[in-house]
Length: 227
Ligand code: 6PG
Image (cartoon, rainbow, N blue to C red):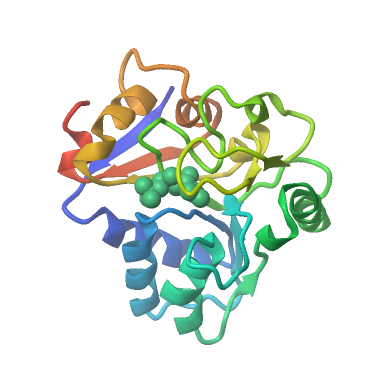
């Protein structure tokens, strides 16, 4: 596994810069949810980059309405997209349709742009759960075995919020040109060691890091302290 790890004072600032750079080249960016990326999205919005040719996708979504505070789309809309003028193209996951229909629809949207092969995002942003999950692929979940589709409905989330999810599968998560994990806080230190450290464990984030090309991990000192 080749992973480029950076321990930074402000991982959100570096994330914002990388998002803005990828957007300005007209890239396909896949965003993440959870609470960690909010600061990065806000800082990216403040950079006044050129997003008009970029397309925004998501690595996963909660099966809630797009105005629900738990929606990954809502987070990015409020912290980033609403502040971009001109706006990028937005290909959100329609979580409100439920895990089955929502996954089908997103799979079709990806195929319409990327064809039958796995989507090659220019930048895939991911968080890391304290259990080593990323996107909505949780440790031990049956969805980890799905290799014949790019998108899967996840009936049971392994962590809060306990709503069904829609997630990219491992083949889709490992096809990106650049994958950027951003992880902060001491409560993630063990997961960081397990996912990216020597002699870790077979958690979903490690599978992505092992399978993908060009993986960068941005950490603050607290998240890095068990490495
Ligand atoms: C989600 C995610 C998920 C997230 C991690 C980290 O929808 O929940 O996309 O994979 O990135 O759980 O979340 P936090 O940043 O909230 O710790």
